[in-house]
Structures are given as structure tokens and as C-alpha cells.
Length: 444
Ligand code: PMP
Image (cartoon, rainbow, N blue to C red; front, side, top):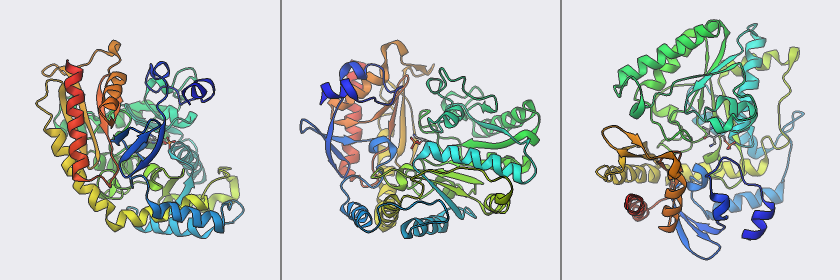
């Protein structure tokens, strides 16, 4: 398998340098929060695949829901006014649970095309309401909004921009509200004030708020290093967008579906975005699917305007019936105890990781629910990152793997945790213990 992989399978690029040299690690099977590799070794999946297998592996009822739908109707297009029962029922169920008036659901295949969909629908929305000049988009440093070309431009990770002249000239960034490394310091009020001022200033810089179509934010920035903004930050940014007539897009691709506790992180902060993107936990990684939520105001404008200059936008597999059937069953599992278990496991995880705070390498422990990070430093007082030349992310990933733990290590040594919601207390404790062992070996 390793030879065939090297010869033929193209992996996503910009993963850890050196993985190609080390060779692929092949997984064979999985159950709950445990994955088994091709050699039969069991590991604890502290990252739920790629923050997506929220319901855990090997859930028979999900498999049965998919099989039933495949037998009954494996495919139906969502084009030409056609539909299928599971897609309609899933849209209705999601709308009922989404914050506020996010009552309209556009299904995609994953998160990147969900973000693309928002950009296209937002431009269309601004055009049909007579504001086509509102064509500038703003997102955050350390933000991640996918790897399609448009989404990669909103993403603020340099590897996603190389060679393509990204971001596009209409895509702009403002500083992340990164409490541990914010130039204004860690005070929540100061961070919120700085972000508000930065959004106002960026809007002015591009020609005034009358030119700005939308602002994008993850409730907790995931791929940028699990950055948790201070309490009240999301609401303050949402309110400023409303004041400036800028659409507020919450990217809940990671935070959605129980990752931070509730079904949606926006609900916890009691904010209603104008649009919301989700994927990952929507189908728990069993099959691909994403969903864009649109508010009544945005949807009504688009629906009313559709005759004039309709935007051509859709996918062969939009609203795929098998994905929708899986989504419905996954949602049932969340509400049948998984969310509750995830909240308990999340509290245990954060308490356990905070127990590592005294470790010489640990600069900060942060997170919410089952979305957590440990930021490593060589000097706690100066908050000095680990030396990049030593490729700490890959080395820590490899060591953790040898200790029976799959985690995610970012850039200069941020360890990310996002285990499945089905984790038992013993699994959470093992995750923390294996992390401690990995840190001790990193220090040695
Ligand atoms: N938005 C966010 C916040 C994400 O974390 C991701 C994926 N990590 C995406 C969008 C893109 O999703 P996908 O990989 O399913 O295209």
C-alpha cells in the first residue's frame, strides 16, 4: 500500500512537510473514538478525522440510514425543481434548530463550496437589491474558509495563496482577535475595541461601508490554531455589521454540530448571522455534505430577484439524498444524548489540558467544548514559539502517533484537539495522558 500510495495517490498539499518522506499511514477500521491502522495498532483519534467525525466511528444506525436510502433512491438532482424526501426533511429540521430566522438551507458537498456559495449568493443579493457596488469582502487573519480559489482567498493562511495571486483584490483581512498574541494585550474590552476599529477602518479603506458586501468570521478560528475570541467579540462584530449594512457570515464548518457544546456556536452567543456555513459534523464525515443557511431577508431578496439576472450556481450532488439521510440520522443521534455526552467530555478535556499548564512547554491552554488547543512555547514569559526550522508540528504529530494518539499540530507548535462527541471519560483521560507523554518527549 505504501508503494502504491507513493506512486499514484495525490494527497492534499500543504500538509506537514516530510510526511511524504515518512510514508503514508494507512487506516483500516475504526469504532467509537478509536482508529486501527493497517498493522492492527489502535490509536485514539483526538481529532475526529479532520474535526468532522463528531458522532464517532462505527455507528450502525448511520450506516443503515445510508444503505436504506441507497436502495430506495440513491440519487436525485436538486435542479429543475426536483427534490427528494430526505433533503427536504433535513432542510426543515435544520431550519427549525438554526439561530433566529436562518430558515433557508442550500446544500453543498462540503465546507469550501459552502463558502463559495455564500460569496456568489451575496453578490447576487447585493445586485438584486440595487447595490451592485457592494462587492468587497472582509475576513480575519488566521481565518480558514476553504481551499477552493474563492474560499482560499478569504482564508488567511499563506500556503493557500501561493501562485494564484490570492487574495483577489476584493478580498481583505483584518487582524484576528488572538488573545494570547494580540498586540493590544489580552484584555477582552481592548481586543473587541481593536477589532471594531479595524473593521471600520478597513471599510473606509476600500471606499466606505457602502462598498462592503460581507464580513466572515469563525466563532472559534479552527485551522488558524483554535483561537477563541473573548466573550462578547462575536456579538460586537455582528452588531457593527448590522449598523454598517454589511452582511455577517458565520463560518460554523468546524464549530457547528456540537463541537463547542450546542448544535451551533452562534446560538450559545445568542447571535443570528445573516448567513451561516456548515459541513463536517453535519454528516459526521460518513458522506460529504455542507449546508449554507440563509436568513429570511437574504433568501426573500434572492427568490424575488431570480427572474431578472439569476445567478447560475449549483452542483450535480447538491442536496444528495444519501447524504441527507445520513444528516437526519446524525442529527437524531446528537439529540439522543451525543450533544450531552460531548458537553461532559468537553469539560473533562479542558480540565485535563489545564492540568498540563505547569509543563515547561505549555504557554496557553484554550478552547470550548470539545474544541481545544495547547500552544507551546520555549519561553513562557516571552511567549516564544518553538523554532520553526525544527518542524515542530510534524515531529509532535509523529511522536503523538507513536504514543497512540492522533492529534493535529499547527505550524510552530499549537496542538489541536477535537475528539468525537462519543468519547468516554477514560478516553479523555487517556488523551490527556498521551499528550503529557508526548510533551515530555518533545522536551527531552
Ligand atoms: N470553513 C472552515 C471554518 C473550515 O474549517 C473548513 C475545513 N477545515 C472549510 C471551511 C472548508 O471545508 P471543506 O474542507 O469541507 O471544503
